[in-house]
Length: 130
Image (cartoon, rainbow, N blue to C red; front, side, top):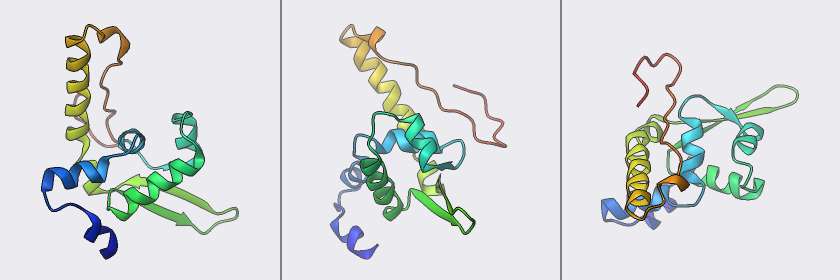
């Protein structure tokens, strides 16, 4: 991980953007906010991403401490991906970006082309839905 850290920018905002940049990273993280998921489940939830790119994005997020990969030694072997505490801390950031995207679409008279911002509650989380 030390090699990855060396490649990250020193300006904090640039560093943050570098860590979450990538077409699929925010979407993958969004799907991991509520509970751990297997690779096949992520593929079903994000059908437009290829398996190669999905694995690449998951590995990058794992290297940056946003995602945890757990291998279950069973037959057949099972692997689950979950958001780490650091990854979960991005939830309000991603929600703010989503809301900004809606505002941007509204300003350009394209509000009908975007979806609602929905963050699903995690298991055991009693906070109200936005």
